[in-house]
Structure formats: C-alpha cells, structure tokens
Amino acid sequence: MNQHRTQVWAHRGASGYAPENTMEAYILAHQYGADGIELDVQLSRDGEIVVIHDEKINRTSNGRGYVRNYTLKQLKEYNYNKTRPEHFRADIPTLREVLEYLQDKPEMMLNIELKTGVFFYEGIEQKTIDMVHATGMNERVIYSSFNHYSIRKVQQIDPEAKVGLLHEDGFIDVPQYAAKLGVNALHPKYVNLRYPDYLEDCRRLGLDINVWTVNDEQMMRDMFAAGVHAVITNDPALAIRVRDEFERTGAVTAGVRT
Image (cartoon, rainbow, N blue to C red):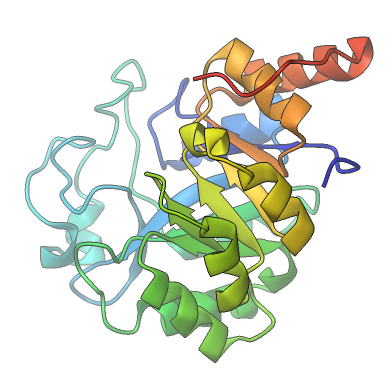
C-alpha cells in the first residue's frame, strides 16, 4: 500500500465548490484533476437510479419529501443548488448520466455508495451493477455501503466487483472482519486510523483504505504520509496541491492526528 500514489476522490463531486452530487460538481472534479468521484445512489418511485445523498430532498433542493416518493420526472422539476446557491440551477443526475460522462475519462475511478441504510431499496444492487456493466465501467467502479448486507449482495451478483465497507465509529478487529467478508477495501471515517494496528492490519491483509471526508490540510498530509489508497474530500483542488507538495518535499508526519 505504501508504494501506491494516494488517489484523490471528490466527495459527492467537488462539493466544496459546486452543489453536491450534481454534474457541475463532477465536471469540476475532473477539471481539478481528481483521480475519482464518490457519489450516492437511491431509487426513485419509478425505479430509476438517482444520485443523491439524503433520503429526503429537503437539504439539497427547493423541494420536500422522500426521494422514493417521487418519479424521476418529478425529481427533475426541482433545483438542487441549495448547498451552493450561487449556482443558478442544478439538476439531480441519474447514475447513467454520470457513467456516460466518465466513459471517455479513463483516468477517473467511480465510488458508488449504495444508500441502503434507511430504506433497503429492493433490487438496487442488481440495477446498479447492470447499469455499470451496460456502460462498460465495471473495471473503474468500486461499490461501498454502510449496509454490509448490500455489499454481500453485490459480491453475490458480481464476484469480480470491487467492494468496500463503510464504517464510522471504531469496533474491534475491523480489518479482520473485512478480510473475512472478502472485500477489497475499508472506507473509514478518518478518525478510525488512530485505532491500534488499523493501518498495519490493513496492509497485512491486503485491504485498501479509502478514507473520508478529509478537508483539513494537515489531515491530508497525515493521510498521504500514512499511505492510504485514496483520500475522499470535498476539496480535490486543495488535496491535489497538498499531495504534490508532499511528494515534492518527501515530508513525513509522526502519526495520524484528529
């Protein structure tokens, strides 16, 4: 893992600069030179895969209510610029729109988070995998979720799929648990890297670490020094600058701070 150049993945796109989980944010992420994009998927009432983080549209749009209660056409009627209102208009994208945008950008990875922690969204794993394969993006996608049953389902549907387990608070022997499930990566909140032997155990077990959400400059340096596989950040422009500086100076940090 230390031999790998840490990647920078834009969290919900370049969400520090454009409305989160919108095409504007993904386009900016590419323009800033991000190595990948992280996004969230849910199902509309008519079974379309839409890209949005919250189960409700209240926080990010001028509408109200649950995503799953609206058809795609109805969801498209709202403006999703609420997190960055200086952007006049932002639509909710479908997963297909994002995949098609990334098709001719082979340098970019896509981390698809299955938002099945509140609603299980029957069939979302199969629909998402089918869409990824239909667009020829399966080699550049990693699936993640806080719902580890969803990840197990992805593995059953597509044994070749890259998968990662999201987790936030520390529980004992997380890397061993992940290795037992046969996943490729752990996606921890950055504070989890402080736990005893976390980094060492991940290296020993061959698990990538894709850490979220790292927006602080010093924390970015710590993550690059730790040799994580990917830093997931709202500010890919800053992360890339810090990474370039780190690689140029060979800076070393004493440990992971929070």
